[in-house]
Image (tube, rainbow, N blue to C red; front, side, top):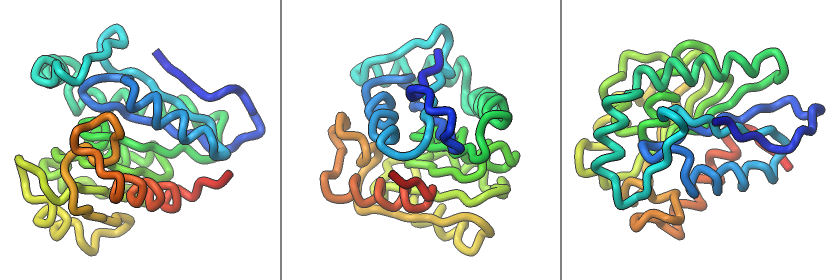
Length: 202
């Protein structure tokens, strides 16, 4: 399943939103809606089998099923393929990813498939520090992560060409208004930084 903004073919920028383990849920739909106020076409492809969408309360099942199929590596390959399909129609192809979508976007950024990437709390980026983005990449971390040290990963990324890292004093999911960890202070700040980094305008 692929969703896009209404067709204004004069637009030269495409933004692909890469979802979390839950699929294209209300959060991803909300992100797409917000992005459509800018001069871009927005795409929200589902990388889950049959376009599945899991409710938040099924986090354990969603995680287990995601790791079984498609998994981060396969999702990244599909993301690269999807971004490539947009090249004939758009001068700029950008990507915003969340959690597993962020790690997939990080992997995709190393292929040259996208022109700029924003990765929101991609915790498994720590497993792929050998990736060198081929275009500018903004990595946004929550400082309070239960499974790893965001500052330690940010330190390893420091000085990397084309990589900007930001850490906010919040928890995983702080940019998602539907998350119990949403931060009304830091979520909008991170979004403003992401929009500025991507160079989107109204």
